[in-house]
Image 1 (cartoon, rainbow, N blue to C red):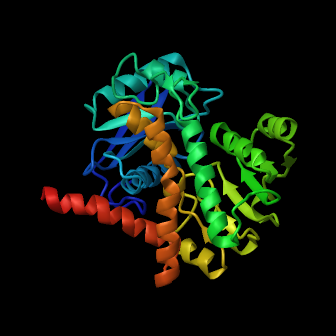
Image 2 (image 1 turned 30 degrees about the vertical axis):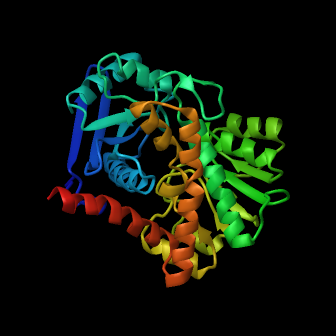
Length: 356
């Protein structure tokens, strides 16, 4: 399995493989770019079908974090880590402690945060053996209430703010009342987003690989349960992908009926040309690494001195960034994802030229 010739390898600065027979740990850490600061990104645990699939995921995700931090105007680079295994079956305290030891050997070039399959408690266990974990400090959350460090509320809030901006631009609606929104994935972030959508008067349709998560959304939010194979093609106003990536691809895009795509999942586009496919179909795609930046903004402020009012204001600026992207896309005819990529590259590549 070659890394340098891998189709998702894009000038990554470092890729590390860790294995420990005693604890069963198999992990990959990818550091894409540190021009703007140390690489910070989530530590994901997932039952990948193959090592190749895990490598593909960590390379894509780490690059996405570089772009996300650059567009969010924070002094961080992009990195990601994945632990191979089912978090509900294979995760152990000893494994997490070993992951912490592995992170410590990187000397701070990569800082781990919560992600799919890991929690604040898991990061704290890793933190017994490394200081290079984030999102674990108890503080005042963006809502003014006590927070244990989990960045999920900030990610969900930023996604909600971005979704409203997209709806206003594409549908001309200043309110979400009565709009139909399909939420794919109602985990930590997706459920919080669904709560805000429900409070704003949206009509919810939800799916998730875990039946109990769907049941919770139905019982607590009055959502309509939808089979996972049907959620993407529902006749709704907004599709909010909040699960894993690559859901917008050559097979699914022709079936889409939503006018707006605005969700928290990373790497929603399976391939670069899918961006243009969405534009050709008249669908407003809200670039994922822009709309879901609330969590990384929250973690950044934790690192630099947390003031929840400042965090909230910074997260709300996601709407302004999206407005710029939408307007530039309309003006030059380029798809929104390409415009967002260009803005990010202008920032972290310019930093490269300065340092050179």
